[in-house]
Image 1 (cartoon, rainbow, N blue to C red):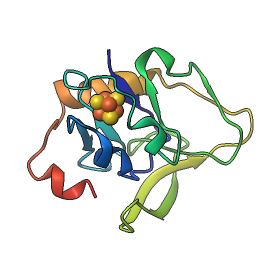
Image 2: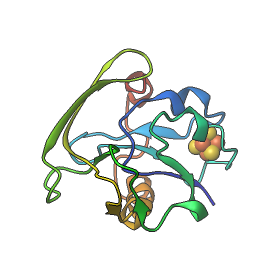
Image 3: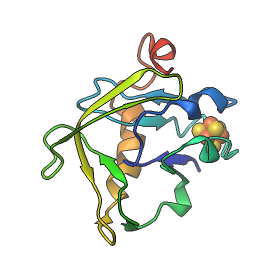
Image 4: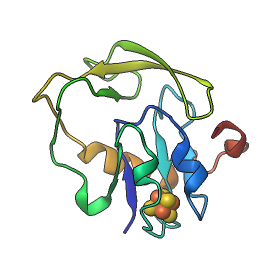
Length: 141
Ligand code: SF4
């Protein structure tokens, strides 16, 4: 079992600071991996990262909402080329560092988002993707 970061993630990075086993890695290249990702083999399911996320993007794998139903105003980030996600987002992470995401969408109330893909993407980031890429610690804050 693991925790999963969904596409509500806007790369705040606060989760990285509190993870006791250092298993949360920022996605890179960002266009392909816009979120932060949790290594499912290392996560101990402590839940410490959940309240740290200002966007409420992190769920225990069993509790990932299917589908996620928006209250309205949430921003969702997807990989480059995802249809309908063409709005640029600019903000700041927990450490005051600028965050820029090119492929986002602002949800309206009752919009539904399928998070099934994100569970898969989280696993694939470590199985087939960059995983713990060189220098990831320096880019996590
Ligand atoms: Fe790290 Fe605990 Fe979150 Fe797993 S649940 S990613 S171990 S902080």
